[in-house]
Length: 315
Length: 264
Image (cartoon, rainbow over all chains, first blue to last red; front, side):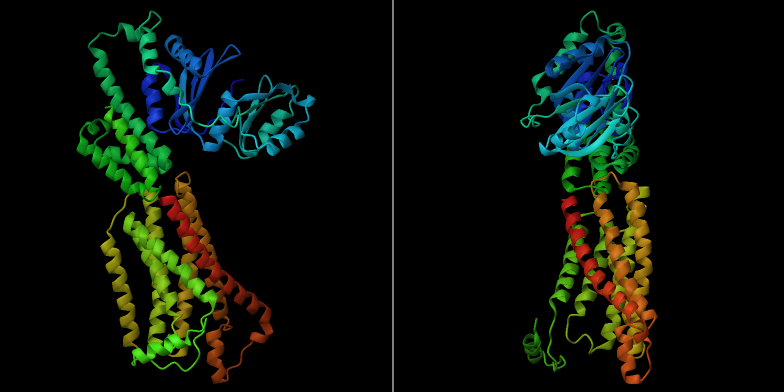
């Protein structure tokens, strides 16, 4: 079972048919996401792990096989264009959990599919602690799965297939470990796996997307739409997308109140479509900054304003 | 710390100041306490300059608190009874203004609206203090009994507003718990819990007439006291008063330093 944790939802179950992959990834980058973007296709799953907007790990899980990094991005483009359905979700996670997820998605398999009964589980937990591992321990049966996240040997959270968010107690995961036939995987982040490589910088997703979407497998609406229409549709979608992106950015930097604040201030200026006017953009930024001063640091507000300005520039 | 020489020199420069007859010894703890209040006042003043208007009320409150606490360090503070009464009033106005700021913060988390202006808060506070000074000046020179009543009023107002502030801070935290400075706001809750115990212990001692001002009064009036029958309770209340006085000022300074880090 391919299981990744859900954190603070920034987008959830968005149909992939509505998604332009390069734009979506650009948003995650500009929004300085720390967390996970997940693609759920009928026959495959994909996860992109981000650290402050940097794409640090990509993995595609298809037919019990794992495709990683650049190859995973290539596979994702193909899946996006060929799959008839699927959903896209983005979750913001804490830095600690993100590191552990990075271990889960791309780390070294120190223990691979071992039956729990056959190993000294207590000794394994001690080893994680003493060796100060940044890792994810996956405990699973064919029906259920649970994850335990570690940062430098310390437990930083729990997640299981019925969770909606990172949990702070082991209860449910412990129960999964007690099920007959439960197995365990331990994926460890090597010390030199720091967040240095930006996969998005290694693979030009936009050209990959454009090249692939031009072939015969491209989805019907893209190829059958009259030439004049896409421009108009794109502008409308972009304005709506911009509004969503600004709200998501405010939520990511400021929290729940940031979301409400952005919604309110966007409404005050007459919606995201007004942001093509630089004065309106400035008005929005000033208004959001004023309220944010009671909720976040000056640096965070500055970063958020820059991210919003970058998004608005794309309108 | 013996400051007798310093204050004697001061009286020779400013002859209108009353002469210093007793040694002026200020203990290190009192100095440290006032320093903590100063740290809180300085940080909150900084927030008020550079941040949203709501900090203005909280900042003025902590500044007034620092003012009223530091006043007690001067060796003449018992010479002018009107000034003692005024400073008790300033201490009381301080918590009123801080509480107003906290209420405004809560309204902001619910409506995301910031109304009013800094000028209104400054002028309003000055007017309230001026009114308090006027009332005290128009009335007879406060006796020891009256001064004790002012102090009791100060403890009572603090006690009940601390309870309201703890509740409001908890509600603010619930609204903004995923915001970057949520833990800083929660730290304010801790400050008010300490202040509640500090002022509560002071109020308790005054209610049962086991406080030092009352014992000083009856020393010359020949009124009897039952303090000896309740020495255990009195000792506990006095310890709580001292410990939480220190913890309140320490936690205030710590909270503002933490908020400074979070807001930078």
